[in-house]
Length: 448
Image (cartoon, rainbow, N blue to C red):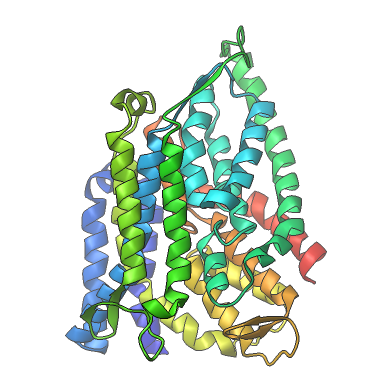
């Protein structure tokens, strides 16, 4: 146990760097973040080699890269490229009413094309419509709360944890059982956002900032809509990544998923390859068929995806021991009530990848010996327990910038567009002050 905790130190060190350096020395961090990430990966490799072996270290790093990071970053890259080739132009100005409507639309859209897809599609239009405003950081914070996290609750396409549940026997449409919690949270957050935005909207108007409302609402124009075809290609690729591993054609005699053997037990599976190829082809075709003027209007750059790629390679590699430790102690934590599952799954999903965290507690629930509920490959799980685990994993990824894949991307794009976003801990002040009370209400209403 002590050894496992020591191996978690590089992950903790990297998180502290992400949290503190932008506060105390932002210029250094912007220039040398890649060196900081490399440093913690090297520290991890040294500690892991001392504890295990060079081969064991190589296997752990390669498993993190091929098993998790590669498909993660390819998906983000594809969505970033395709969404960057869709432009919104119109006369809508960023008022509280318009902003609430767009956030609600984006939140529902997240369950159809995923939180990352919806986030990439909606972020630039919302930034454009509010470009005249001075106080707009809160808009992007609620964007992360609602579109980048809450919206993924209604289908397995919405968020990877639910997709993993589907792969383990949870019926595809079972996640619609999350709708009462989803709509409750959506209503509460929409009301809170409206009043915060209205106050700051009036403050902007009082300081002489004015949108051009002479033609407001008379013309809305989308450019590059053919890219929706490529967006559908990416959605299909994600669905296939969940379905193909369950087919006999992609399994060997022991039921293991076929692929290219890398080292030890590390395999780059054929379903993962197919997913990556489809997504990269979609991104390539998107660029080849879209006029670069659309990207120029979107202020498209590679900065945001580059930052996410650098930070998350370090996160995925160094968090492996933390996930291993969680898997070993998860079934022994004595979590037998929905409230416990909701908060434990959610708290860990705020800092660890919410997909393996979801799987740990799904497995833990399946070992509790229930005889009625949802029949999955990990055991029978009562509906109220599965509801709590699913909501915790999906909703509480919004608690930090690193809790869910789109969060940091939205922060980076906002920073690039001159929106002053809070620091890591500054963002957590918002999530603790707004989301935690909402989650307490969830507990009282749905999980007691």
